[in-house]
Amino acid sequence: MIAIEQSVQTGGTRAAFLRRAAAAGGTLVAGGFVAGAFPGFVSAAASPAQDVRILNLTLTLEYLEEAFYAQALRAGKLTPALRRFAETAGAHERAHVQFLEKALGRKAIKRPTFDFRDTITNPKKFSKTAVLLEDTGVEAYNGQAANLTKPTLAAAAKIVSVEARHAGWIRAIRGDNPAPRATDRSLTADAILERVKRTGFITS
Amino acid sequence: MSDGLDFTLEELDCDGALQESLEGIGFSRSALLGTAVVGGGALLAAFGAAPAEAAIPANDTDILNYALTLEYLQAAFYTETERSGATRQTKMRRVPGQIGAVERAHVAAFRGVLGRKAVKRPFFNFRGVTEDADAFLRTAVAFEDLAVAAYKGQAPRLRSPQVLAAAISIHSVEARHAAWMRFLSGVLPAANAFDEGKSLGETVGIVNSTRFIVSNPNQTGRGSPRFTG
Image (cartoon, rainbow over all chains, first blue to last red; front, top):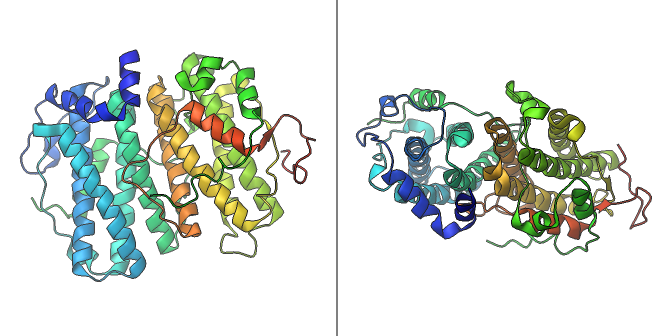
């Protein structure tokens, strides 16, 4: 317990810890993205193998967000406020992807390909989609917090509040209440995957 | 990225009242020096499967009481600002009411979970920041960023999975508030790709530096304390 707490407090060892977790981990398929890539998702006790499955779930969401912002910026149809949001959030998502890829090493799931249709060219649809993706990120990390080993939780907690800041920011730009609930929802992996599937954004 | 707002609280002075109140509920000196414990929170009532008061590990009770103290502080700050009407003529007119309701819900939930073990509400003197819209906003940014860091610093220390699940879902609401207040201030709502946590010692030091928590409701400051509820 003491060793774990020390490692939680030593930022430099975070990645190493996660790499070790990944090396000890299960056999997540690195093929194309399908819900079936996460079989029998969460069991009771936290374990390095379970960390790998959970981090691959969140990596998938980070890939999705990163591609969404990058493609929207390339399309060049955003308002100045939305462009500033997409540039900033996009850079953060890229940093999250890099962090998770490094942590997972060979166990990292492959980057899917995406088709965002008119959500990257229509500013109204863009902001609505950004709300959905950022809320989903928050709900995915929150839903898995208690299933992670403590060192991985410490790292994930540094990411989830940034997703929540993005969620609050894009809602503020839209004129919506940035924090409409006293507690954020926690969704199961199945619910997250179902929601991602429903967007139809992932093509392979 | 520095935007000049991160040190709003730290620039103020300190009278050690929060530290006293924490020692009063059983925090050891070593804990207060930052070597152990504290800082999460939980809206367990929202989770159906809330453990009974007695079932919460002692470690988690201490952390919940610390979080409760921070929530008392935030709830009082927004409630008093709503009452003063300081933001009424501004674009923030609904903010104190909206965020205040959420922070009061967090207080009620913690008190419900902790029962007789809940720490008592301290007395506050906000020294004028609840009566001026600009000072209110600067303080709100600092409080919300601090709350995010305080919850994050302690989340991995929580032992009960239910308490952790609840605490982490409050943590992200504080982050939404932080982004919102920053947006209203015109600074970047999400300044970094990774938010760092703060230890108990760091958090208590910053809260103490505000002198917002006072040991006596009639203590004189710049103006009388108005929040007593």
